[in-house]
Image (tube, rainbow, N blue to C red; front, side, top):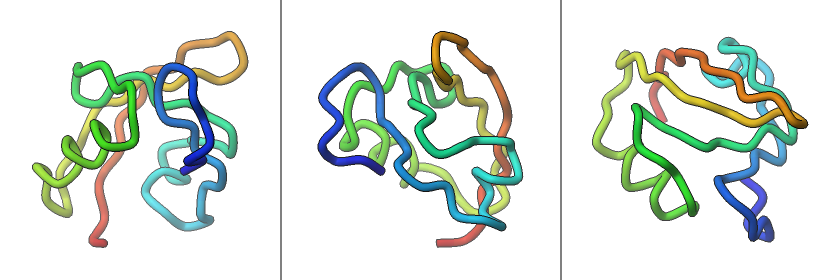
Length: 79
C-alpha cells in the first residue's frame, strides 16, 4: 500500500506475486475504491473492513486502473 497516496481510495504500490490480489488480477498502481460495497477512502477504512473477514472469504472489490473502474472478486488467503 502506498501510504503517501492522498487521493480517493487506497493505492497498491506493489502486488505480491502469488498473493490473493495477484490471483484476482490486481496490478501495481491499482487504487482500491470499494470493498464489499463500502467506499474506501483511507488505509484505515481498508484495514477495518479487512479484519472483519477470515481467510477463505470471497470479497468483491472495485479498483481504479488508469481511468477504468474494474469490479472483481478476491478469495482471501491467510495473513
